[in-house]
Image (cartoon, rainbow, N blue to C red; front, side, top):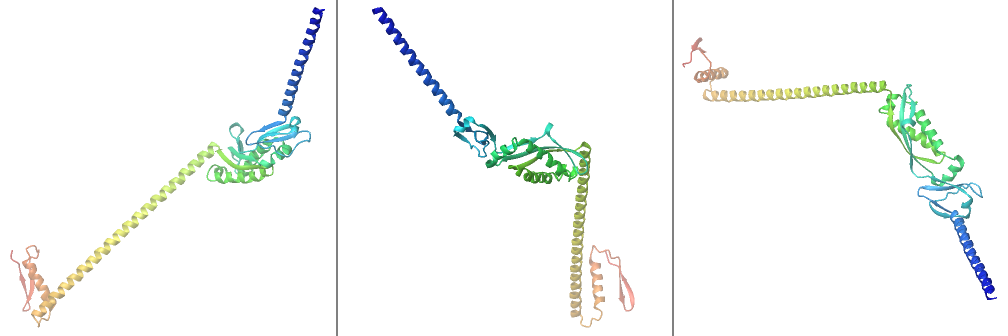
Length: 310
């Protein structure tokens, strides 16, 4: 009897232990299930992005899920697309670059970069209405530059008109993309490659223009120098004339003073000029540096030749 009782008690204890572990496992599974369900209802949205419910119990939602962590029981049954909305760049360069045709029928290769962002409160509308918006963006990146380039010559696009063309592309593209809630920030023409023959022609034209400019500068320099020389000659001539006038005035004043003195010495002097010339003759005779060889004076109606003594 003792052995049988022990065997029965062991079986009771064994059955009780198995039930206890079964409950623990069941609770653990239930906990994991609840945790999974709760976790499935959490969504984390990175900075610069928006979450869009494209399919859910209530259908697509036009309300964006903002940055950060969010919990909603419907998330577990929803298809949520995370879309970047902040500033980004779309390039058309290299193998994906543009070929545009100018008004003079030249094929021009362009590398274009577009800086843009999505209107943050319209991200859900963009996704629901248009799906992937990049084909729309690419279509206008290709189409607008072609339309703009057709209004200008190749030389203008590749030269002085490059900035004008860039601004016109940005103006038109801003309008077109704005209809899709895509905000254009900037358009950059990173490269404009003309045919080689056109590049050579432009370089030759610029070289010729530079020669003209150089020649004009040289001509202006010559004119300025000639004007300066003319001014210098005029100033010199005026100086010489003024000096001559001053000298003549001084000489006349000296003659007047001498004649006045002669009249004072001889009140009966009738020919003051002749007397002054006689005085000059006498001074010449006494001047050792004078080249006077002889002097003719009037004496009682007979000319008298006087030869200075050495």
